[in-house]
Image (cartoon, rainbow, N blue to C red; front, side, top):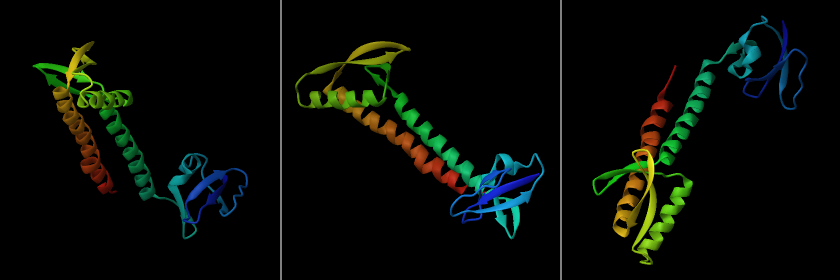
Length: 171
């Protein structure tokens, strides 16, 4: 089968087609391949080296590492946003930490610390059910530390362990 491939300055195949392709700043070559050749569906996995079209496994690995890194980054963000559990007066509650909750925590902290109110009613989950509990300045101080630890633990797991591990993966 006749196939036209477009090559970038690094000799990587960036596009292909059964008709001639012309892209400014790129070279186009005509090659013969079998009808089920992988270059047809995954052209970016191939390079032209010494006139031959070859599969570049290192590029594939880097592409997969990048995709996995993005997936792990998203998982870290989602883990942070899911919130955390914290025990107050012997009762474990789940605190949301989505973006709205983070803004609400900041506003509540400011009001409590300025002494404008002594407590604020806060929505939490207990045993999977929503309930409201009073937060005082002292409890808010505990929560600020727990929030920081929750975020830091997730970011540390991602940045200090998973990213270096992923970076070191080789063929």
